[in-house]
Image (cartoon, rainbow, N blue to C red):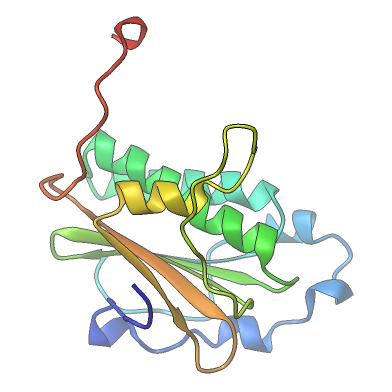
Length: 188
């Protein structure tokens, strides 16, 4: 799916913060600097339950966003399987943005919309993600395959200023979740 914007109309205005901030190359240490400003203080979506983050394109941010997503979903009372799936989806989408995007801030939005969660990752790369099945010997390349397998829906859209947003939705009640593979005897 491409070009679809699943956000409610009230949440569709762009966040001005990343465009007005200092370029990353001017910062002494983006890993240390990012520890001071994970949650965006420059904007307010004013729309229900949401988590809105701006992060640097460095691998350490993936773990920090996972924990922020986990904490938000726990506070919202989401079931554990939904939390686990959402954390995995956030890891995959943000990991792709860190790996394939240019050196620019990444925006992460997590919104509780009705009976669904909407997760969006916006980066400065114009290249849209594709699903591919990696070979057994490959260590990477399974991210969007996992997103497709776990999410209720997913897609990407070009942003008007630059880059793209990759999004996915997840049902809160688990009713639209894809079937899980059976547990192996050793996992039970």
